[in-house]
Length: 252
Image (tube, rainbow, N blue to C red):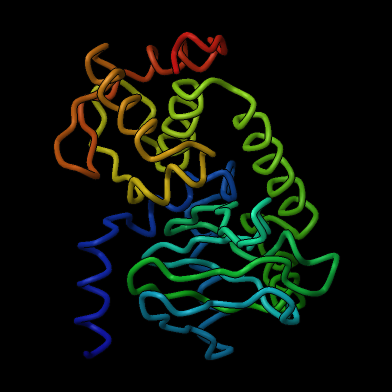
């Protein structure tokens, strides 16, 4: 498959433009030239990398040498944990979409603590921390590494708090974050593309059947309309905010 065909396929699977990437938490307050400056550095270094569905972007224990800017597609970051019965299970700790920065959480340790696997074909831009610093030093639009660290910590804390909420509040908070990342958290905005149900349930610490039941319950409350299995439309963001603020277990 040629580069143009691959890019077209990725844009259909994950229709998020580069312009939308400035709306993610990473680019809060950044200018229009922020991503183009970073991607230009990646082009100069010749570090754009296509990763096929199911392939590792990096594996647990491997050296942390680059920051990964996800240009198209999606990546799941997961840990393998031992179960009480002696078996192992995979726990998803991040679901990254186009515009996300991956791998920075491992910067201090110098090695990756989890596996990053492509969900569908994707393209990433590999940038060394030193190269990122050079770009940031020459542009007020590109956040320095210290701001990246603060952004990563904020996201991690939000997800840790999310897992303490009721099932419905967890899903509401996830959808709100998804809307914030893509500039969609206003009434009448465009549809929302979801991860697969199995991956989302894992990420939210829920059983798949529980997540399915919550989706049906929230749709009956007019929180959104299911356009397709993985597409939501007519999202009521104000109602999602009210549900997120409710942590009692009666919503499960």
